Image (tube, rainbow, N blue to C red; front, side):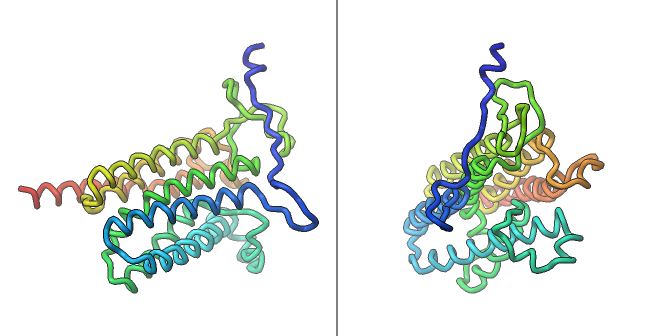
Amino acid sequence: MIMELAIITWDVNPEIFRIGNFAPRWYGVLFASGFLFGYLIFKRIFRNEGLKDEMLDKLTIYMALGVIIGARLGHCLFYEPSYYLSNPFEILKIWHGGLASHGAAIGILFVLWLWVRKEKKPYMWILDRIVIVAALGGAMIRLGNLMNSEIYGVETTLPWGFVFLRNGETVPKHPTQIYESLAYFITFIILYRIYWKNKGKLIRGVPFSLFLILVFAFRFLVEYVKEDQVAFESNMTLNMGQWLSVPFIVTGVVGLVISLRRHRTRAA
């Protein structure tokens, strides 16, 4: 009886309000707020390091394009390649939904490579700093998924299970959007404190490596209680989200070991 009372019934309208055809959605507002807060935080970082706001403005445009294009292509090519390759114009219909965080990560890495070539900055310099706001952005996006009643988990008997009524669910499911959002927010706090504790003088490669390990290791684990996004995943030992997380985790571990060894060698 206590368990039933504790279950959360979730029936939030993804639209904030509607006036004719104008209907802003919570997902869009949270997505945009991630960029806004990220911009403000990075502005403080740039000023701490004596860099011009013009560089940040260009970086923001690069990041927006990398996230949106990368996330969209990631979903289309990782999860439903046969459909989207047969219907390429459907890739452009981003308003229909379908974004992949692994694709966003790849998109960010690519556009940052383009940005550093133009601005003449070391690639790892920007990676060690961009992960701070990327973690916060990920937390906001997952809250947007919650408001959309999407990307949730399998059935649970835990007292904080959510019944997603808008999707026709009648039993409680793991609110994996909240799990991931909390994990990303904690990652943001850790990286943010590392930056300011060291006043921007970072061990090159450590923040980036920590981000890869923390974010994608948690993503790997949470996939065990998340519903499959596409049908073919049901026959896989590890689902697509887990397979895509493994290279990032391995890269993070290897990068952390190399960065710490180099630092110790230089300090000796």
